[in-house]
Length: 405
Image (cartoon, rainbow, N blue to C red; front, side, top):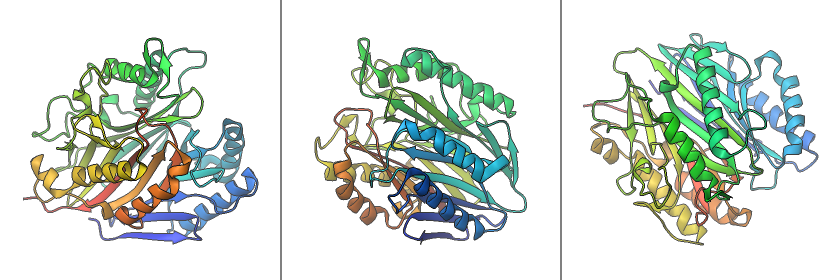
């Protein structure tokens, strides 16, 4: 069970949260360098802090990470630095062109795990599986379309096919995915007679058409058309980077609850005026395992029902996005989904990412997030949101106790 969640700040440049599950310890680490020297100097500072965090827990292994970069020219350099630092134990890694809002050259989000029962399997540079206590997690990261493909639809279909292939290589399947990320360059830019994000949605809808997600784990109360939790967010350039988390377990009493927000239209049910193909994702996906719940919160913006709210007002949009998350993970909403005794508060978030369209909004947004979430580990990155009028999007993971009745 969850015995404690400890959040600490290390050297002012990193924040981490530990979740102790008795047989294993999971850690979420967010690192943004304080120094403003060369890229190499900032990268080494970040990795030095990472080393100090891992050293606090014997046997801790970093399994998956996302590197937020200010420009593509530094991607090759950080890959060389990470290869030298990790050696054969390099985590699977996303390299995303989303500059840290604070002006740092890079930021790192990392997930780690330790424990005597933990088993880690590597299936090449893009896929890794973690098994413990009857649960197997499969992580895929850094999946990019095959070179020279043109058009978001074709690129997205290719990337999704690659995810399916690496999951098969890991002995799993696409239907076991519970969480996805799509980092899309020029997300709100036109493509043909539509926009790039709409083309991503069209590809996702076509690829998912015959897939029944998590059939053995989804609760009987779940609606038809269950989809993974997801984030579709912009980045610099015109590329596409994808990643996912899949889950397998045969443990008795383990099940998934797809969550929708009562004050938001399910994304997969949006009217065609928002997109010719609605975005196929669930607002959150909760895993109930014994007496704790892990809840993946999808990218969440200032949308009520299906309409964007508070145009050009970063403070009101930030408050609305956080209110949406708060309602989504609340005990009352779990009860509406047929699950009494579960739920989480904003202070149960293990980590959050905040994507901001305008760097100038950083200070105002950060002040609100720190007041509402408390000392949760966070990274603030510059990225376009999927609708031109939206200024901020927030995602995260919550860990909470439950006592089912």
